[in-house]
Amino acid sequence: MALSPQWLDELRARVTLSAVVQRTTKLQRAGREWKACCPFHNEKSPSFTVSDEKGFYHCFGCGAHGDVIRWMTDQRGLAFMDAVKELAAEAGMEVPAPDPRAAQRAEQQAGLHEVMQAAQDWFRASLDTPAGTKARDYLASRKFDAHTMERFGFGYAPNARNGVANSLKQFDRAMLIEAGLLIAVDDKEPYDRFRDRLTIPIHDPRGRVIGFAARILDADKKDAPKYINSPDTPLFDKGRTLFNLHRAGPASRKSGRMVVVEGQMDAVAMAAAGFEEAVAPMGTALTETQLGLLWRMVDAPILCFDGDNAGQRAAIRAIGRALPLLAPGKTLSIVGLPPGLDPDDLIKRQGAKAMEALLSEPASLIDTLWRFERDSAPLRTPEDKAGLKARLIAHCDAIQHSDIKSLYRRELLEKFSEFAFPPRAPREKRDWKSGFAKPAKPLLDPAVAGRLRKSADGGSRDTLAGAVIAGLLRFPDQILVHAEPLGRFAAGDGRNGPALESLIEAAELLEPGEETPICTPQGFAPPPDKSRFAFLDEGADPQGAREDLAEAVSLLVERPALDAALAAATARFETDPEAAFAEQQRLLKRKLAFEKRLGLMASRRAARAAQPEIDLSVADPGAQDETRK
Image (cartoon, rainbow, N blue to C red; front, top):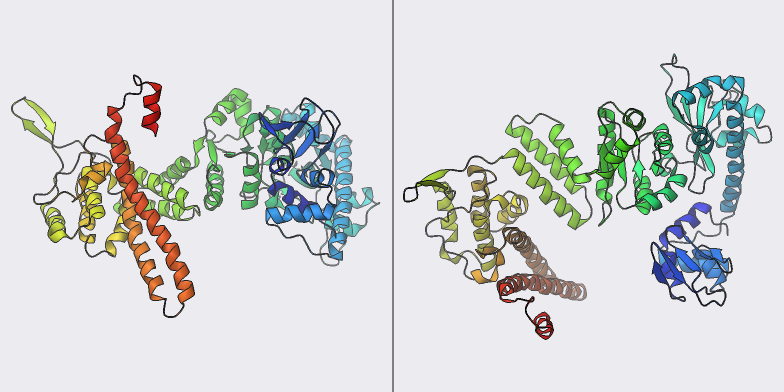
């Protein structure tokens, strides 16, 4: 059975080396690595290290070295395929079935690697010929030093239709075509893809040449593309490749960051200025696979695109690709370059310190998204503002992770409310006793207050709904924040819906962004069990109270859906008793968890009420222990 290098690399990436080693060897954390006494020879002091980032173990005593597969074969004594199968089962991967064609493809790829390296050697040699003068002049104009030009392997593709075929005669033309070096059109003679261009080799993560980027040198050829890349081949897939990743990956482990720029020459310029951790996509927007490669290196890659409109569009396209993939701790940061400047321009004009200053304080993904949508179109009319809100909600809906989606929705709608409804000067009333003016509590519109009072009559509100309504009266700035879920809940709840709809309407009619509690309508009774809810406590911290109110809204919206699902499961007993029972038990567990969350709100209130009475600074240690218990 032939396993492709790509499949084995994926297997190694999915398995954590230290977790496998720790099953039989006790490891101790040592910075970003692990250490232990070597399991391959007897020693008293640790000289055996394991690096998850680098993907290998190494002993400085006996020289034992390898990856996770080598560990399974050498330390566990398994055969290679047995080791691969065991690791694949852990990683959730299927081992490819025996296929003679797979072996043929692996052999074919090995041959293509030889072709690409030979082409790179020829391009590099051509740069030093008289024909390469224009390419050398261009490199001189970019002021790249000799070290930068050497390690990035710049070359020159001569202006000849058959230069590659004549220079690489040891390879069949079919291989040259498959490697993307020649173009074959119908029955015509194949000709060179890269002609009279500066070439830059593209490498895979193992440092092997898999393709080329080529820049035009003749400024008069305005119709020709400025850059062209190799086509997709068995070695090169532009959507799965990042330029300079094989160098930037090790550098990112030292700097703790990964910088994504727009083009290959930007990455070269960054590296020449000392920013070794720069990579670039292959002339297209970042793909999901490329984002995955970046997130393996760092938690928050930095997008550093040009400061023109095209650069901003590229950044927002990358954000759009990233939103569905966001996970706890995995995000993007964005650096906005000055208008009209690319990374090389900024470094040449203002120096590397200016670039470092920008990279050290990147903007968050959510702030960039908000500013882009806010500034993308005029916002003169209510319809314009409604369009902005719709675009923000569409971005939130693209996020797959439920917690991140709800947090993005909440924060973006808060930004929208602050922007669309800026606070006005508070209404004032005269306190004739003191002679000073004091802000009055906002008053509800009489019609709204009447509907709110009517909906509250006759015991129509239950404890939780009543507490939420009272909490929104106390914190009116939270009404629009939770308008979406409350609106959905109100539409399906005939008892509490009118009161909530009245409050949402009031948020539009009252002072926008008003934080002063709304004056409770006359005849509007407080919730029946006010003591259970911390956000109704007049002495509670306002920020904490708002967080508790958000939790209460979440519970209020969740409850009817849970009750409906439980009723539906119960109704299925006659037709499918076994499945209905299992579903009912699952939902009952969820309901118990729901009730527990509801009970925790009262517990938090009690804990906060008791907290001032505890003075740990003067209590003896025994008293502190009893308090903690």
